[in-house]
Image (cartoon, rainbow, N blue to C red; front, side, top):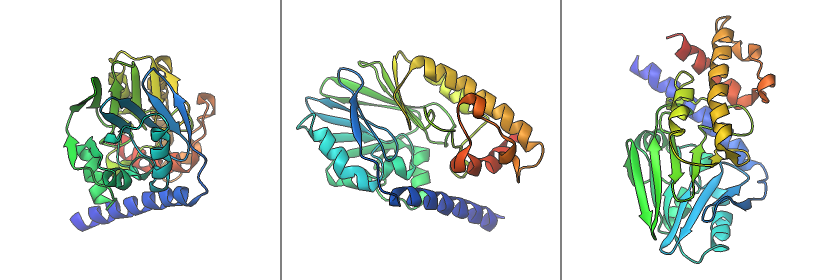
Length: 279
């Protein structure tokens, strides 16, 4: 039984790695930078959204896309400040958010991640393993600024962290919220369609105006409120589709009225959702 479980996990990890490898081998879209508050910037394009806040003592960075994007990320940070990147906060383990970790470690940045996410990275033999983890919450204080990382529960994976910039009223959600495309529930990494909306709802306790999603355009708090409702609706539709059989359930899930189509990543997560919802 243990060998069978290990085989399933290994196949799932390799399958996901293959998808991200395909993404990473496509010609990358040029990265663009946007200022979203007095002291927070977002770098978008080719992978997960990166945020950073320069301070008088250095830079706090959130995620670092694919490995190939690290030089351009470093260049864009340098266009704002001559201070080094001191800390990187990973929102979760997927390679489109942690691929630049090796380059950041080489630049003497310290990387912090939720402990489940680090375990997922280790299981997938991903490079750039962070040296520091946290269970529920950690804070970084640098140059008179504070950044909070908080684990609120399962959703996209079992190790997603939201990153809160209290002085800026900005929240980075990682892939717990995406403002373009359908969500992906990574069952191989403990993701949960049952808990996702409740996890995101907990993030609404923070005092923020701007939301940086894992993918897609920068949004507002009202968009995150709507996302909670969207995830609950998706769960209901998935459950209904799964009742007709997990093998082809993805074909019976219509998300068009929610402004999205399933897509390869969403469809890949459907069998795991069916299994979870049947328990």
